[in-house]
Amino acid sequence: MAFTGLFLITFLIVHAGINSSIFLNDNGETFNEFAHFMSHNWIVRFLEIGLFAGLFLHIIQGFLLWKQNSDARPVKYLVNKQSSNSKWYSRSMGILGSLLLLFLVIHVSHFFVGTKVALYSGDKPHNLYDEMKEVFSNLWIVILYLAGVFSLFWHLYHGFHSAFQSLGIHHKKYIPIIRTIGTGYAVIICLLFALMPLAFYLGWLA
Amino acid sequence: MNLTLKVWRQKNPKSAGKLETYQVKNISSEMSFLEMFDVLNEQLILEGKEPIAFDHDCREGICGMCSMFINGQAHGPWQQNTTCQLHMRAFKDGDTIVVEPWRSKAFPVIKDLVVDRSAFDRIIQAGGYISVNTGNAVDANAIPIDKKDADHAFMAAACIGCGACVATCKNGSAMLFVGAKVSQLALLPQGAPERESRVLNMVAQMDKEGFGNCTNTYACEAECPKGISVANIARLNSEYLKAGLSSEEK
Ligand code: SF4
Ligand code: FES
Image 1 (tube, rainbow over the protein chains, first blue to last red):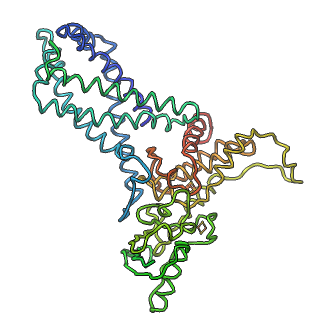
Image 2 (cartoon, protein in one colour; image 1 turned 45 degrees about the vertical axis):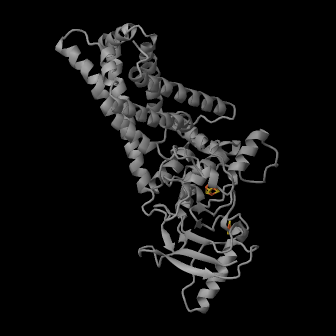
Image 3 (cartoon, rainbow over the protein chains, first blue to last red; image 1 turned 90 degrees about the vertical axis):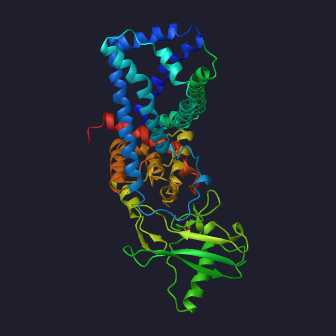
């Protein structure tokens, strides 16, 4: 979980970084160049396989974890005051992750599939920026994306430092640093992602 | 004070249990929770009913026997506290208190509130022996140990094996207990010779017993009567990773 989680965490930096180029407000020129590079460069294509493998593994591990953990308590408590000893999001990684998976299916069908179809059918270069504009003109989709980012935030907020704990890194000196970086990471990444659909919908971008 | 108690009653490991409701009267706020149970049991005996089976031994917070899940919390509402050290002043007149046994696949209910925690003993046994020289006892300070390490080992050794960590954890994980047992020896030179085999064997036994996996909610640390830190879980993880990579044992 920790290894694949950290791998996906690094991917999100790249993803959020590249997508932020839409905020340059150059009608998506830079962004489309990036998108073109990402879909045509062979190294990136190779890494893409790794990404899906990592994601897949993370999901499988998560599922096995959920299964083993729910088997470990066959009879549930009638009264359980969990809020007195732990945070809701730390106990909700499974459900947050499942919501994220649902979101990802929709997200991939919005942007990834279209790009791939255009790539292999040899049509004219796919304008991903225009596609984003179109997709995010629908209020419901914007709300759905914001909900996805909400799940992502709490998933990352717990997942970041949790990964280090699982790898056995726990040190008085480093824990506060890891916590701060984790919080900063979750806030920045999610803020960027949340601003993307909002910026299109509210017409902040040309 | 007068209280309503809803207590889990279960005849034997196989039968289905259920909550039974009892009333207790004139309970002093200075009584311990177990003394209140003694009063209830005497009342039940006088009524010709089967008294409630519950575990206890020292009644001073050191043996770890008094497992009770009280109003949704292991050992009740007080922090860093066992049930025997929980006093009735934690409750108010007229309160309803729900008492359940530890719930974990690895801790099957024997009767009422008594569970079988021998899975913990088997984990400790799996840790194996510690190599020491026989003959005369060595001088107490013959082996130099860093004060910090000695302190951390001592804090880990404070674990009383009560099982509150497992009972509280939403995953029924025993990582805090095993982390404490591995740490108390891994931190000391005396624990060094069997350091790798110990952690591998204890973790293997832990998995075999059917405990869940840690997802770092840290509920265990919050409910542990001895305040065992989750730093011990991280140490367990790193000991396990290191041993797994370098040890020749499988
Ligand atoms: S770690 Fe704490 S809660 Fe767990 S068995 Fe030891 S003393 Fe009890
Ligand atoms: S009876 Fe020994 S710790 Fe409570």
